[in-house]
Amino acid sequence: MTAHSLIDDIRAAAPNLRGRLLENQSLADLTWFRVGGPAQVLFSPADEEDLATFLAALEPSVPVTVIGLGSNLIVRDGGIPGVTIRLGGKAFGSVEIDGEMIRAGTAVPDMRLAKTAAEAGLDGLAFFRGIPGSVGGALRMNAGAHGGETTDVLVEARGIDRKGEVHSFTHAEMGFRYRHSSAPENVIFTSATFRGRPGDREEIEAEMERVTAAREAAQPIRERTGGSTFKNPEGGKAWQLIDAAGCRGLVRGGAQVSEMHCNFLINRGGATAADIEGLGEEVRRRVRETSGVELHWEIKRIGVETA
Ligand SMILES: Cc1cc2nc3c(=O)[nH]c(=O)nc-3n(C[C@H](O)[C@H](O)[C@H](O)COP(=O)(O)OP(=O)(O)OC[C@H]3O[C@@H](n4cnc5c(N)ncnc54)[C@H](O)[C@@H]3O)c2cc1C
Image (cartoon, rainbow, N blue to C red; front, side, top):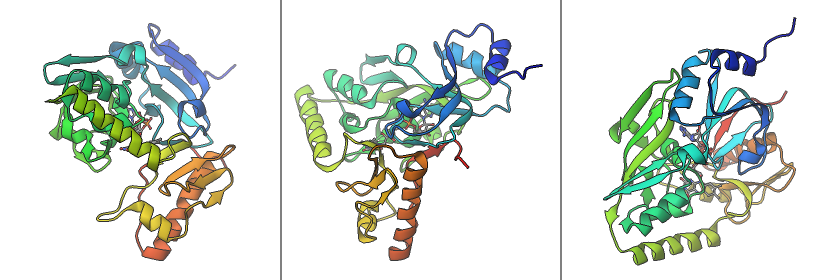
């Protein structure tokens, strides 16, 4: 007798799924760091209804992980057990303008959100121009830069829970804090509504160009990286503590603390997830020793370590 695989069980429980279901799928190419093991099952739903059907039918004990554009993730080398969900641009990639409101699917890249708002003469979202994630990741992380944050412009988000039920979350219910939302962990956001302020299109576009130039000058944006590794501690800057601890340029296997911006870790080529995470832990240890400050990861580490 052969054991049933998870994907067979899913197909049997939800025979009418329209989305793409893949087994043992590499995730390295779906993250900026380009490291990590496979997803046991990767599901890309055809639309919101398909996602709800899938979640309702899925055995409650199967773990579910959602990923966006993988710009804030270390997928560990042992991969992700259970189901990993990635929302595709076809079903979750529309942006619509209605007066001052902007409604976007959560697969929309932040950069496109910024551009569409600017084209409609709506100000307040230019900061999204420099963030390489998706709207889904921005909601979970309260992404922000250059003095703006998701919390400043978000009106409402919509998402589906682990049982397949659809919920709306008001701004207050999103529970935004610095790089954090306290909306229930098991919710997969599917769309969001933002409010812009009427502004001058050319001025907004000029602001976006300033944002782009500032990043090019200060961040290793062409590297395999996960952006800021650690959250800034209260009243301080993580990069300054990392620099003072002598970690700029520190190497572990194929991973390195960026010379350009030392709160960024980079995959120099051939790094494993364990190299990158281990280097991050080494940085935390050295910062704790030199300054007594405990740094907290901003990058999400998901999946299992290899033995
Ligand atoms: C070069 C570079 C520069 C960066 N600069 C900034 C910056 O200036 N400011 C900033 O805030 N961040 C920055 N980041 C980090 C990153 O871009 C943000 O955290 C972004 O919001 C992550 O979005 P993502 O789609 O890539 O999410 P992922 O990295 O794929 O996932 C991040 C988290 O969001 C969750 N998530 C993703 N989609 C959904 C969804 N649909 N529903 C529920 N949860 C979801 C995931 O489960 C995970 O917990 C930078 C990263 C890089 C590589």
